[in-house]
Length: 250
Image 1 (cartoon, rainbow, N blue to C red):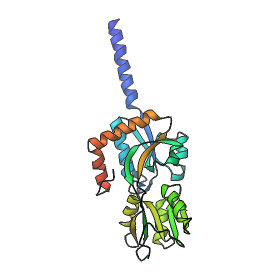
Image 2 (image 1 turned 60 degrees about the horizontal axis):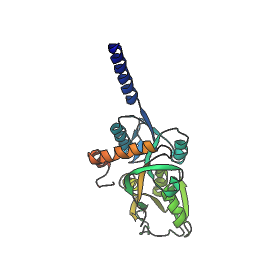
Image 3 (image 1 turned 60 degrees about the vertical axis):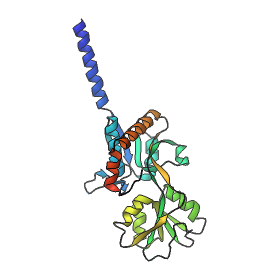
Image 4 (image 1 turned 180 degrees about the horizontal axis):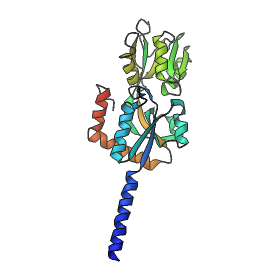
């Protein structure tokens, strides 16, 4: 009988271990926000957000399934339980906190402004009166532009993705683009280097980019916070960051 009990106990341990190993965390990112998240020619997701998500899953010893989701639908789909978390450079705003919960920050960013190289606009704090400013829809930069530039006489134009706003700036269809600093800087130093320039950061706009989860998933939020602390402490975060940035964004 003891042998049978020991065998049964061993089986339970094996089954339990298999169940733990089989745990899958489904994570959404945008896939249109380089260098943080983007899709390559083989339709594979890459970028800082993707690498951080994979590192967190590895630290938590869970399987990571990362999916692309259009930005404007990313919070509604999280609430509809299409995935468990969002790692997509989302800023933890007070308005968003009414609907969802956030982890600790995994980087911080101010807003910046890009204009054409021959533009007479030289100050990111300008009100853009009589000019057209582009921003990604449903973003913190869109809110800033609508609240600050619009009332001061600017025409604010919204785009589904930052790439589309940048393309219109390069084509001369808008006078400026406001966005989070690091993706805007990456574009201005690559695809936009011949046409456009960054004129500076917008004062007082530095904010936390965090992982979004549903409010009821506090246990998952705490697990993500613990894993984030661990990858920062063991150097994994710095190793990932150095692939994309020559400076500290944490």
